[in-house]
Amino acid sequence: NDSFDDPYNTYDESEIILPRVVRFWLLLLLDIPSIYCSFILLFYFFIDKTLRSQLNNHIIISLLIIGLSIEFIDIPFHLNFLSTGVVQPSISSFCLLWQFIDLGLINGCTIIMAWRSIHRYLSIYHDHLFSNKNKRFVFHYYPLIILNLYIWIFYIIVIIFPPCINTFDYTLPVCNNFPCYLNDPLLSMWDSVINSLIPTIIITI
Image (tube, rainbow, N blue to C red):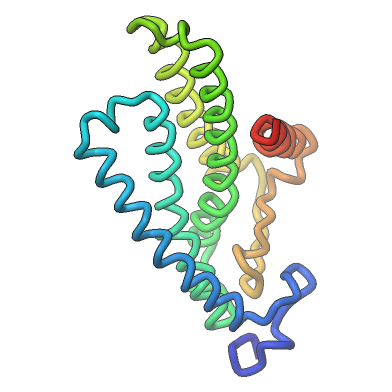
């Protein structure tokens, strides 16, 4: 009863009130051009030395690479769920990978985008910070490297190797998308505030 045969009665209270068949086609029709555009952009960034050497484009390249991971893994997993009504394969390792991509890398995009906003401000109003090689390393390369490492290390630890026992629901998208570390008050607060709320505020400002 979770397939396209009964699209109006297939959502759980944890899902949005929109037929799965509609969500399926929306995701599919948007994901294909998104993948195409990402590849085109990365292609030009990598073959064009002028584009590749521009500091602002390094952050965009990072976002595109993370975005491709989401487009190639997260979206197809959602499409498969929407078409079958269950998580397949129904195993914990699959759920951990899906939650890592869906929660970790999507939050990671928000973090990198926040840095992109700060970097853009600095490059316009304080361009002297990027005037020589040493300054570029301190104010450009180092933050980007640290943020990318932080995203991968933090979410690998809390999702792939959590300090708790996960419970998965294979009848909900992303296996209910509630990794057990979110039950820890400190980790949950850190993830919500540091990895999501503050970056969102920075982007908005």
